[in-house]
Length: 213
Image 1 (spheres, helix red, strand yellow):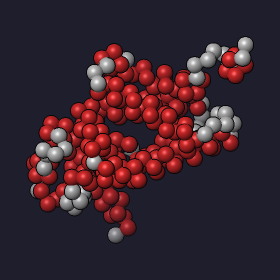
Image 2 (image 1 turned 30 degrees about the vertical axis):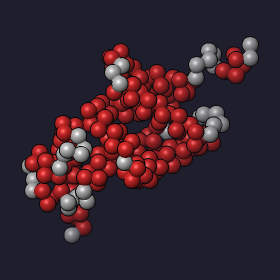
Image 3 (image 1 turned 60 degrees about the vertical axis):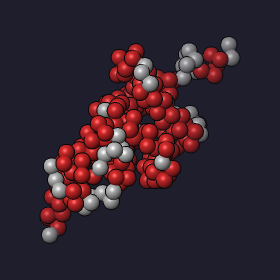
Image 4 (image 1 turned 135 degrees about the vertical axis):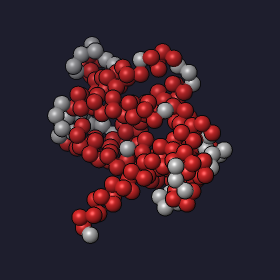
């Protein structure tokens, strides 16, 4: 029985991803409100009732999509990897991965998800409590550890995590609003964000000394 557990877990994960892939296409094409569980099941090639074995309802589906976009289950491991080796290179690599993940999921879907979050207070609260807050907690712990290890200067982890995530969200919104040059230079963003986050805008290695000259 014990030997079959990992296989069962893989089968469950595969079916969840199959359903979420179908939901991605259906929500992007029809929007959240026009889409039905039946539409998603048809796209996935499964019976309607099968979806309810994995997701309670359409809200559960959209939370599943948001969790997958956030890579919640991998976030602790990803942040741990950033903590290893050269911080600037690891952060740039991590940022590049996040931007590639967002682009791969499709911006039509992102527009649907963000629109729904803005108008549905209950969904917004679930998203914050189940996905955003745990992510912030992990990130704040990492920032504090980097500070303790003297890899970064003393900062406010609460504000820093929100400033960086706000930059992500702002760039997504700019692209959705039709910033074509940003779209063309999308793959330059990870290096640019890493440079600004770690070194700021002032010249020189010691920014405070440069600012006072």
